[in-house]
Length: 432
Image (cartoon, rainbow, N blue to C red):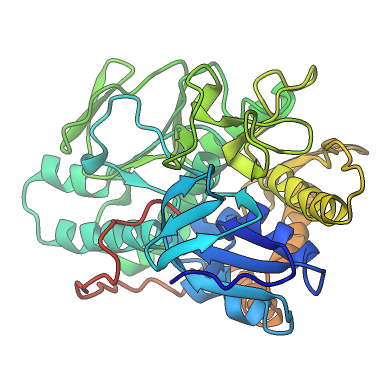
């Protein structure tokens, strides 16, 4: 497939995560032909993937079809495709559906897990809807197997859980699994001794949630430990054989290690990546144009805009991606109209992380909070950020049901049959 050239400039956006989606939204019905490419036909609300993994939400509640998002946009087309190479000299993007010509190219391919030498085949990750469902299936299946396992060490290995990485994803996963252990699993598996199940959260630095204030980190750790999570700091997991892992000098038997310890930029062939930028991100100028390129831009987790305030680039968070996407969409219209683009400036609206029921920490411009109020803020902000009215309503009722009933009703083990992919390349992680 080769794109048909029109009188309007063609903008191709690669990746439909937070950054790519916001860019496209700012270009709706503007004087440009816009093509959005993604390897999935849906947008994923990644901050709530951990609730899919812990049986709190169904997968459709955190995704939304691109074609529904853009169905009223006359100038935006979505294509299910994967990028194979960028030919910047000829303004051509090579994809699994053919070559596409562009006037402006926006790369928003996000990140993938960085394993730092660990064997990725032995661990579970939390980047995609498939990852989240795999974690749920694996943990629930392990409990079923534990019921029939006579060997006590093997039984512990089946139900022990180790989460590596004390950022928001790791903290939220640990809290959600702790609530399952305390309120849900004892009723589902009365024949199992839940005291044998240990949930470990391992962080390589001296505190969890290192991007937040120390007081927030201490509060979150206290919440987790009161819920029964064993928090280990200043510890790096260097080896894991799929059976046990060394943590703080102890050999912990477990078949369930979830890796949330780091990410690196998804590679884009044809675009030179700079190795001295943390996480192999692409260096961009103040309008998110990739350094050394005339009409190729990078936004979100892929981009490293180095400023005095952020010498290593902005934090790889959804708010940064969304603000860069909105800003670039406006700038592209200005560039097309031969007007001067404006430099990007990040407005930090705050950071939130939830640990469990009535337990969260929040750092906002108007103050720092913890406990019920922070949890209420977290819930409201995430609920309103979901795409689609149905997703908001279904998520709200799931949360209310779980809150009053102390239950997680979506404890379904659902294996998918192997299917033949339409493209030869294996998909990378979903965009952020």
